Amino acid sequence: MRAPLLLLLAGVTSVPATAQPLTLTPLTEARLRYEQVSQTGLPEDADAVTIRLRVGVQAALGNWSALAQTQGNLAVVSDYDDGLHGASRRPLVADPQNIALYRAQLRYKTDHLAITAGRQAIVLDDERFIGSVNFRLNGQTFDAVRAEISPIRGIKADVSYAWDVRTVWGVDGNGARPASIGGNYVLANLSAATPIGTLTGFGYLVGEDQATVQGYRLSSQTYGARLAGSLRLAKAAKLAWQLSYARQSGYGRNPNHYAADYWLADLKLDLNGPQLGGGYELLGAGNGAALTSFQTPLATTFKFQGWAGKFLTTSPDGVRDLYVDAGYGGATIGPVKAVALQAVWHRFDSDRLVRHYGDEIDLVASGKLGKTTASIRYANYMADRFATDTHKFWLQLDWMI
Image (cartoon, rainbow, N blue to C red; front, top):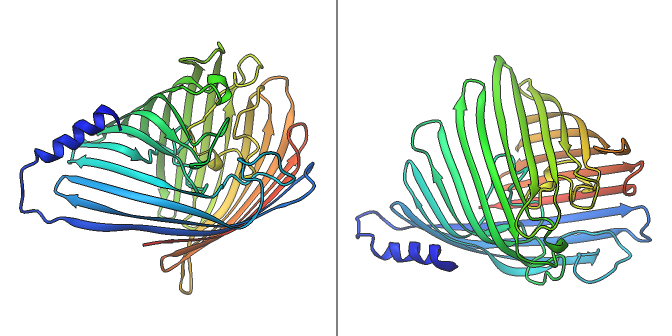
């Protein structure tokens, strides 16, 4: 995987023999999911029963480790549009069948330095800009070299260079939904602990080399800052906050000349079980043309702006998301641990031209029994002036060694 990885591999052979033992760790996980989608404007519903299995092993010797992990996805019930096989009468469920190498990486780690080379998952901060998209069966990985440097306590630099992004569309991906997107990606974070939380400055350069993916128009440069912290108000009360700002413009081969802003303000109160929170997120509009609004092509977008997935690509007029959530977390009911409940309400509006897009209600309940986590999830998007009414329902079992 290019010269940096070859150099690191060559470095392994020069490591002197030690008395440290070689340890092998299995990397095995499985997921069984039923997803049902009903969408106004399509004559039939989507019904998907899918199984994902990831199997691999990690070998560690002293400061060095290497891992390889494959994944396979099987559609037991495939009454859905998987995004790769032409027009469909059913809604999209972005989980095509797939058998592929998921991760293959070499890592060197000390107390102050970690270098990872190869195919890897990269998650930065809350995944708003860079994530692993783990909710989808295929996930997202990077062919990259990553350096994490912590010279002193409370300071960390995290810099990656990637030359390929493996997408959620799997090995059969094609056209505007390719298996991978080559290019030049620089992902840089610098964080510092402060009395009011962790302050992070970041810069993300996304230089895509494939014209089939929106004609290079997802290539961008994004610079910004984020503050995330918490405060213990009492023995059973904690307040957490996030504040973030970023500015994005075209980069590399992107033919669009634009600039768009991002804002986030989020608060959450945890009363040692009961939780209440809310926030406001803006992905700004540029000049009103397609893909000149603030875009996040490498994010885990499922986590943001509603689970119905209406804003995975930001509309030309941008989006403002006002949300409130309430729930209960951390309960134990008999043998079931980590029982959690959450309800979220969203109001979506445009950034320019003042339009109400729609509202969404999201509900989830989950719990863990042994090594298995079960969840039930529901999303209801009620369209006003954007997209169409959509209902989604999930039943899911996750098992991990």
